[in-house]
Length: 227
Image 1 (cartoon, rainbow, N blue to C red):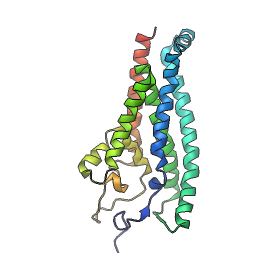
Image 2: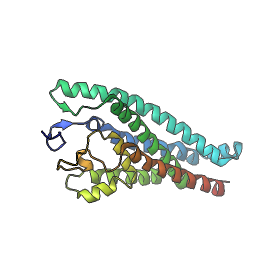
Image 3: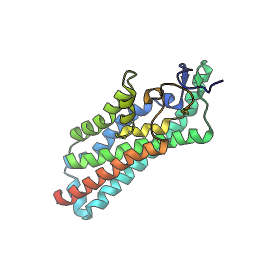
């Protein structure tokens, strides 16, 4: 008997399916992250902060640490409630949820929290670059939302979907992957079906790289521009 894959059990669900709210939460944290710094520019309070703390990079890093930390804790709390509750509700209504180990379930919960935190900090950095929330929110949302919408399209060619799940920040959704790719079983191994080309933590490293790069650019501009 061949091992079960998503295609052989089309009615089966995964932990990622139970966490569909992650996408909406991403948009929320992007808006909050941009406003976290853009409000200071709009109210002209950022100059007061920079005057009191001339080490501008430290101000930015402090804001990033607070924002990322709060987002991570809130995301972890939400995932820790949503995953077991969603599993219980799905099974009580006759739904099938692909089984996972306890370590995989914890990885998904912590990974989702890290994913949200990794999205909030670049929004803060882009908000610093733009100095207003509208441009920052639009830029970061498009960078996250558009690739996600494309890979969620069942008609997207597998080669394109797998590329989009490797390069843009949406690669972080690999942390939700719990299905196993069996090389001896022919199936649709695409992000739409729950199979990502990157390993879970490798996928999370992609937005982490964008976070470091965006913070470095924002810190450099902050030192040169906002005297």
